[in-house]
Length: 135
Length: 317
Image (cartoon, rainbow over the protein chains, first blue to last red):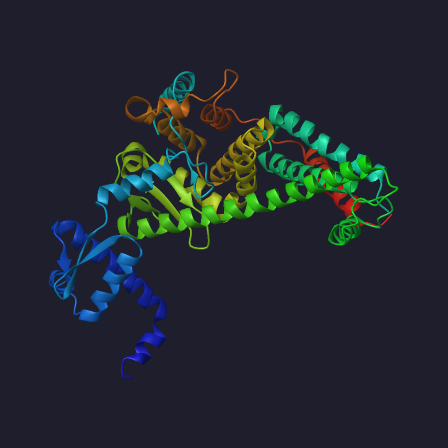
């Protein structure tokens, strides 16, 4: 059990490290555009000295969370992103802009865009604020 | 003892809550002291729900029950023994009482259920947001304490919870001047610090459950606006009014040209002044908050509104 003391000390750090790895590996999957085996993903992570099993664990987590899809290729699994980065950004923003039709209290927006009479009131206010000597 | 007097008092509280909500929704003073107004909204909502459930159940339990729960137990025992309609007793009053009791229990169950269901939906949505942000967002020295998402539309929001986040889009960073961005972040931090999401949640749940109810929709809209005004006030303690109002005005007008979803925004009625315009006007030409004595009486009224139905339901008389 040579590896256990550092893990016990840095459990939180370990979680953060896994989070960072998930992100780095998703960046690789998004960047290459083809499905990759664990070994190929590891090869892209050249600057990190990572165990094969660690990369496999992270890819497995990403698949479980639905961010990666995997398919059998001979004896290995190949991984690819479940959706493009842009699709995920769009999902974030649609929720944020409350255009999903769901009035959830999941988050609180600072402001929303307006139209018509209200917009002209706001434009007037903005002119007044900027006329006051700039912001 | 339960009885017609208690049922009448509870019904009066329920009707009073509905009337009071309508009056509060139409009143102008809440924007002067949003905190006091929110407390009153909460009291009206809680009292209205308790009183409506309580009145239906008071009517529904058999005469001579020592309490509502005792009455429910008696009815349940009678139903289990097949003795709901005993011979020699007039059927109609028993039947009507039973209908009232079932309605009361159903209303109570629905109120509890929508609160739980809304909370679960919110927790799921936040978990999804956090997972996406972990993969997509990054920190930026221009927006200290916030996460940045690469999207051209202007947006700033906070994700409340134990692991709270403030998120701004690249579009918002481009749109706002540094002082304005600082005011936006102060506003969002106030939401997170004071857990405003927990205030709005029950009203969102009510609106979801009773979508047909004008009162529920108005209550939700009023509370949502008052919460924003409260966060504006907190931001103004540390940030200049011009920066906050400027940020609001820029956000409000930014989306007009390209991404205004006409269907989503055209729902406002004719008398609708516009929440964004109301906030900007309020920041630029502030009215003094209500006097301390007035706020104190609002707090007392809010307490009384809740204590009356609770006392009627709990105290033996």
